[in-house]
Structures are given as C-alpha cells and as structure tokens.
Image (cartoon, rainbow, N blue to C red; front, side, top):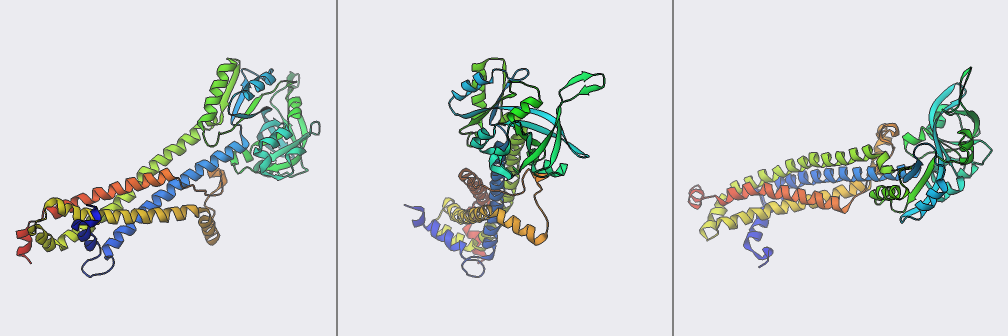
Length: 421
C-alpha cells in the first residue's frame, strides 16, 4: 500500500492544514516553512557565489597567465625549439609558444614602478586569445620588432600617468659593473596599447613587449626564458595541467623547470576551497536553527491534538502509527521549505549580479573593490551537486527535528488524555 493511501498520511496532512482556527495553512506552520526556505536559500546563494567566484577567477587567471610553463634550469632555455616540439607531441597540449620574461623597473617622468615584462609573439598571442581578447586600446599586433613598443595593464598605465602614445623607460636588473657603478640596460618605449584583464594583480604589474625586443633588452641572444603551454581542458579540469607538466618533466629530464598555473596560485584556490567548506558548515547551522521551528510546531500540534491521539489509540492505532502521523507532517514541512528555498536561492543566484549592481546604484556604494577581491563583479554559478547536497543536508535536519515531537505524540496515554476532555 502506498503511503498516500494510508490513514497516517491523511491524518498528518489534515493536521498540517489546521490549527486553532481552520485555514489553508496555520500561521506557525507557515513561519516554519518560511524560516527553513530562507536558510536553504542563503546557503545555496553563498555556495553558488563561491562557485562563480572560483570559476571567474580561474578564467581570468588563465587569460593572462600560462596554463603551464617550461623553463631552463638554471638560466635561459637555449634549446627551446626541441622542448617546444616535445611539448606539442604530448596529448592535451594545444599550443606551445616561446616567451621572454623578467622583472623590471618602469619610469614615466617622475613616476616609477615595478613591472613584470613578458616578451610575446603577437601572432601567436592572438591565436591563443588571452590578453589579445581583453585589449582596451590598441591591438596586440601593434607590437612590432624593432619599433620598441609596449602594451601596459590599465592600472599600471594609470599609476605611471601614461596613455597610448606615451613614453616610458624600462630598466632591467641585468648589466655590467663599471667604475661608475652598475650599468643596467634601459630603453625608452612607446605605449601602443592598454589591456584590462579584470585581475588587479596583472593589470597593475604586467607589460608586454615584442619577443625580439625583449630578448635584445635582456641580452639573451637566441635563448628564451621558457615555453608557455596551452592545454585543451585546463579550465574544466584543473588537474590536467599538473599531470601534463609532470609527464613532460619526466620525458625531458632534470635540465628543465616545469610548472603550471595551479602551483603558482595554489594557496589562492586552496583558501577558496577551505572557505567554501567552512561557509557550508556555518550556514548549515542556519538551516538547523530553522529546523528547530519544526520541533516547536509539532510539539504544539501534539499538545493540541492529545484528544484526537487518544481516540486513535483506543481505535487500535499503535505508537508506530502515531509516529508516522507526525512524521508525515514534519516531512511535508521540510519538503515544502527545502523546495521553496532551492527555488528562491536559484532565482537570486542567477540574478545576483543585477541585484548587486542595483543596490550599488541605489546606495552609491561599491561593494566589490577589484584591488581587494580581484574582480568588480559578483558572478554566481548554480551547480547541481550543490543543490543535491544542500537539499539532502536540510531534509536530514528536518527529519531529525521531527523525531522528538513524533515520539512525544506516540507516548500520549489514552486514559490520561480523555480524562481532561
């Protein structure tokens, strides 16, 4: 016999719809459902925002940094062509491009700052996408060998007070010692473009040069700093980069230094995962508190329906049947609250950016500072496994909250209850 055809189901649903005054839903039951729905919605929204933050951060990092790198150990990579060929022969490697990189000091008039120089081939950079797709002024192809042009991050250009057509001087930490001190190589460059990746860390410190100009400035000859690798599934599978570079390192031997983006930013993503776990536990307590409303609701129903319970007991209903009656009522409240919470949480999560921007316009405040949070938007991604996890944990808490009132109802003694009727 199906549960819906049993008298426990029918009585439990009847109790759910009645209180001191008959109506569609008693006030206290509505409060229980609303509290549970709100707790579930908050939990799902926070989990979705953390998912979106991690995905967006990963995507922006992969726009400006390499999926994996292969460098000389130690010093520049002289046989970079052989290393590039071996890397391209590996499964999952979409592209392998040489690059030149170094730290440098950048000056513009009386302003100066530190920068990370990256020498790139414009055609290959365009094929890879990445920074070529986030240009705000100029084009990546404006970098021409021998023209001594540079593309700056938006924040770096703002800090130096230059725009397209401006002039800067780049000084690299490499030179010869003379009687006058250290003679460091330096060169004047014309700003030909500005990019904005949305990652403050890179927008404030990255400068792009043509790979030949960078090699001449750093006096590297035909050698390269290393080879940048692009992988097919780096975004979908973060572990792919680590597996690929490990395998590549084993093939090439100990004369190479291999790394990947998950190692460079390991602490950042580890902290995100830890934060997600802690937030899930903490916010689950909100759901647990909301579940306690179910305890109060069912205890009140048990107290009100003691006479009805006594009559059921005299008609042959056992304690197990009474447990089922109140179990049905508590389970229905739990299912209704969880379903409403998931619906509300999903709706808010899918529109969170619009809601945040609306609040910013109304209050005149900026809730997300890119200097602190690496991005100015609040993305959210609702994942199915998060919905299932939130739903299962919430329903489990609701079922646990049902046990005590149901047990109390099952212990009602018919003679004692009917004596006061």
